[in-house]
Length: 300
Image (cartoon, rainbow, N blue to C red; front, side):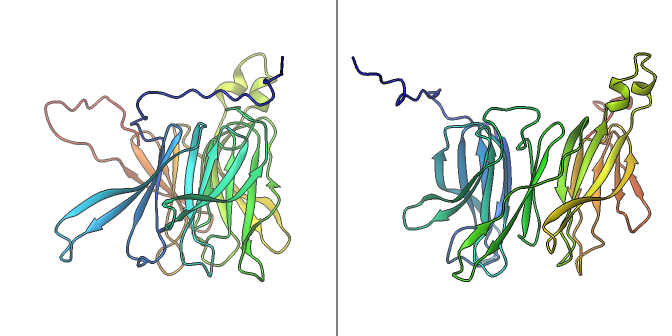
């Protein structure tokens, strides 16, 4: 009797495709379209979708058309898009439970996604120390960062070679022992060194204190990681305390479009933070009406 265990593969497939969106990002990945045309790259469970936003001439009617749908046979944890300088379309990056980061683009002739790169950085499965839970890409398309819920972060630098082929570097680690991550985002720094922001909590002192005093005094930090493209390494360049209820980061346009920095979403308030300017704060608007509870905390 032949042994078929080495060639068997089991998949868990549902009768209906998932309808809840896991992650989504805007992009321009269909060749031949104008830069003003936008698409939406969406992940639902184990399927990825590419939707095209269609507007009429006077922009009074807008519709959404699904261009491509594909099964990746895995749990998608995050997606992002970026455009490498000198290319005409955006590259799509997928972080999943495979322990790999996949870079794909849309093949208009075959009407399906085509894999460009597949790099391994950890074990398979959704693990707290394997990067992939959080994903962010540099707005200028030079690198992307993957972070785990605890300890590990890796940065991949992307470029083109002399034959105009996309090449990806080996992973550059930015690990922090006894450290929890709650979110990351990329800063718009123009053509200066790429910078990524992260919300982190160091639990080393709290774990080694049996009295529980250090646990009550724990702090959440906003940390900047700078990617030195010349030396090919990642350094922690700046950190500051933020409200412990902070749960999400959004990058602010930089260069000629804005002051750069990040928006830190907390309970009842949104903070603007940057290492070069003073912090700003604004309350989250509250809707008036009989159903509004003034004692309920608002959070993004």
